[in-house]
Length: 340
Image 1 (cartoon, rainbow, N blue to C red):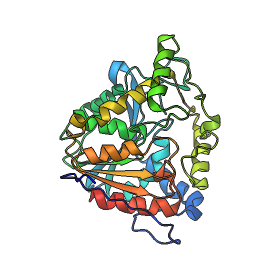
Image 2: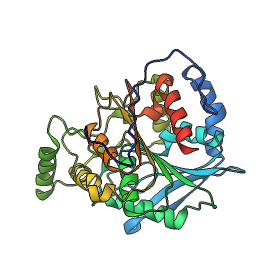
Image 3: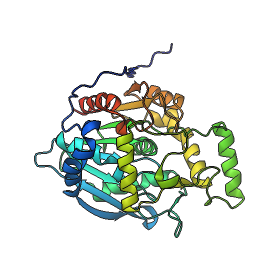
Image 4: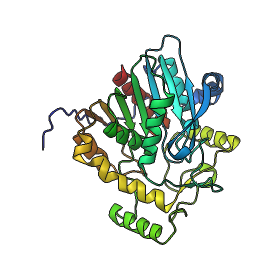
């Protein structure tokens, strides 16, 4: 086995513990979720301020920030594909109860931000994957105010790759990052990634770049595709789907251009010259039952980053931060311990 200097990889295979109290301020158990979410989480989120900023090429992007008295640090929450800040409200509340200022924004084409294709709000399209990175840089340069406190990030799936790419291009901004189920390489099955990328490129050349990729019609009411859940917590998923319907956030599917760009970024993200540029510590969570992203590229990425700790969550689905208590509790304990 090759040994990597300056690398800490911890494989932590979670067992399924009995119900227990977790060392997580404000933790809401599934049996209390329906009641406590409205009593505790919703008022906390509504206490924040919202506005918008102008991203790359003039795209309008929604953001929210919730500031605390005597905060100990800032945390920026970065969502994944077909998501928005709406899915991160419980997590934002946990961080607020733990003494952090919380910042969230919606990527271009998602949530309350400007849609990628005018008149087609359900079609996710991006000219270049690093447009998401450019938006993040504008957020940090023009919107975000650290107020002299450390800057931490927790990012999920597509958002985690945006953060990884950002850290490869801009240093001294993020002090620590949690990458949860990062989309280093999307699951393109039944086709291997190189073939899927070639098919997507051919579709773009044929003028289909802004059309839905094969099988990427938006899922009904934002639900995962058949057989591809992202969480096994029915109470959390049901609440999210109900809130998405009530707010009118459209479910989103990938266009051929988005598929091509999401596959293309893998090479740059894994490039040894780029991974070596990430100096801040990273905690990377991997879900063994993930049906959206490939796992081996996550391990490769973590091996190549100078300071990266890998946590493998046995039995969890893709959205670990939105999972059942048996997965979510230990996950949050490790996240908060890492960010201390």
